[in-house]
Length: 402
Image 1 (cartoon, rainbow, N blue to C red):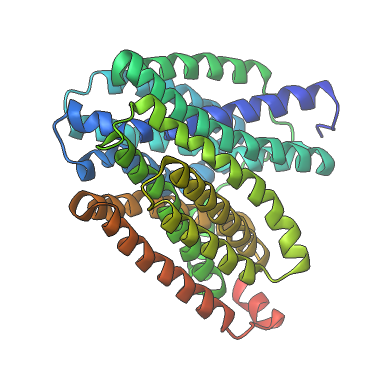
Image 2 (tube, helix red, strand yellow):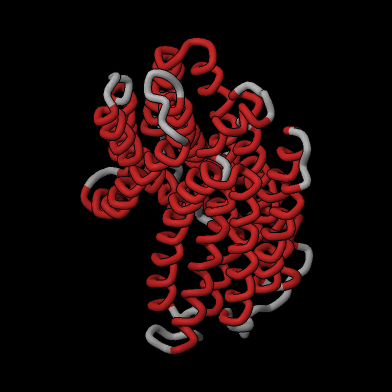
């Protein structure tokens, strides 16, 4: 096993963090560029949202297939294949001459990214000692957040300087270099045993998980929460580059630094769950996000930034608690349960964009407030329903999961 403080640990943990960083850089590269793409393709904001939605939707739908395939061919092979597909798909995007072709390429990018995202933690669980695993997972999750922020900032500044093609080309080059570094540093698997017939096994567990309200309700909470969080930022980007603010895309992309407040509250959620009820924390996180949305409605750049900080803080708090809830309440096939949570999470992020951007396009920020408030009310309703569930006896759960 890879032990903490060893040379193998340093190489492997850095390689996994770098791979995670690259995945989320590529996933969110286009989010700050959406206003640029409306002009480049003479398309509506709702149509160009496919450049973000196609990637996250494809990622969500291919997480489980990648995970199943890794059971047969190995985690490391799947992760490296995933990373080397990134510059290849980036090159394909440069030849797209229509919004449809570019959206399809972005869907291919999302499917490519899912390979690494689906199996990295499984690789760590098999190859790292328990102490090394806890530390490595923390670094991996931090790299997720930093990659998302860096990809958005790179997309904003690079598109301002070189156009969207320059941003895509630059990210493809960085992805190729990163994939080579990961290949050289990531140790071969020593504790992996190939397994066959996993598709049927996973399908049975997926059905069982979706039959339990204590699992699928927090999955819905995670999806709606992410739909609001990521797309309120998208709409804010459109708002800032439009009159009366008319900020350049590079400056507007700086709002994604507000994500860092969520990194802090995600850590605080663990302490909350030890002392208080996780469900109450989800309600608290939702309330903080609602407050942030209404603060951001004020016609002041400082108020908008404060609002985004609150939205990030509340959304990450809710997400962390809902994610942990699913992992803890699943009595078997926990990896499948958490994968299902991520499927809901990313599908929510994909579809929520069309909803909120439509509100923005036709009714401005007042429409966003109304549409967002409706989704927040739905979140409160799901939390209420989750709190009113009759606890399932341990024996009953065991029988269902066997």
